[in-house]
Image (tube, rainbow, N blue to C red; front, top):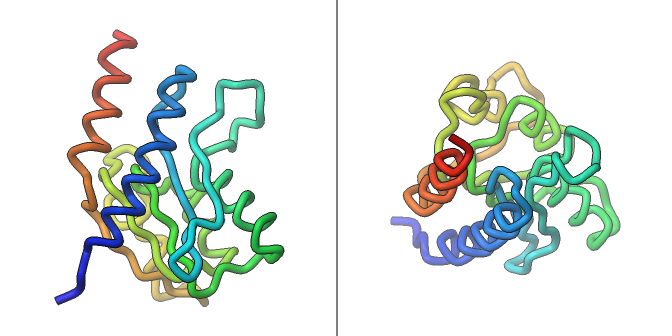
Length: 152
């Protein structure tokens, strides 16, 4: 049986990023890229903060990891994200060769890691990515639900 303790620790870091997004009025999604047990990149949604509309948590975490690791490929790295990646982010994950994705809440509207699409494990793709879902999903879902309730 695989030990999920480290996954929960890193997901808690992604949840901190999600809370940062929430504090800025953004949809609370956070992500971290982990390389050799160390956080190499962080990001949270920033789409409404005057930055490009593709400023999703995963995209920003990957960009931050690229700067910190000084590379554009993330073989051996794990991306932890509080919400299942969308097709755009799944494409970026595939292009950067992330080895593993761990996410919290499923996304029934745009999930591309098994819920609506399964881009990360599509056998037609040249790169395969291991996917673990449901890590601290209730905490991630709670943040999202609070955000959307406050908007109604």
